[in-house]
Length: 205
Image 1 (spheres, rainbow, N blue to C red):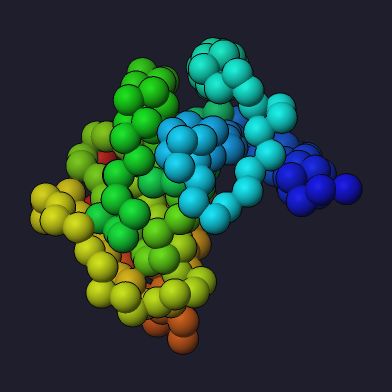
Image 2: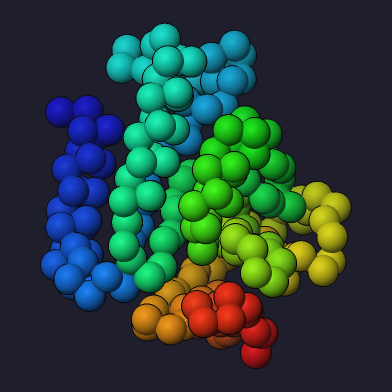
């Protein structure tokens, strides 16, 4: 059994638990997508990496079908909150920078369907980027390769947190409010914010 199959089985188990806990309440729905096929350089210049694209090629058709299916599933959702999870960043001031393919192809669907959060890793840091009334972009990749000092220029009005040390993030979800908190490796709070569904605004603590 390959790693991707193991991941899919684990993900199905997790989603079943989430559906049991939140599905009947219509509180939150998580949408997971493999963002690797979007990144063109993985096909044109894989360097020393080896990828198995046997279930992806032809790439354009795969991405087109994926985006169509995602759009339909998000539109079907009756959840109060819609969270999207992908590996690569859409808005990030981290070392890898913005993934332009996701900005061009995925972001318009998220904006059209009023997704609340986009959560990613890839950059080894903790980040919160967002403007009032728009999607909040959260990076929780502080598990390793810390303290590189790599940060890209970003509008300080949008960049609420950038921390390139190790740490983690938590979410507390109710029907009317989402609170997300970033911690350092010792459990000290670095940053916390709330997003209100009624007013679609967020506040910093």
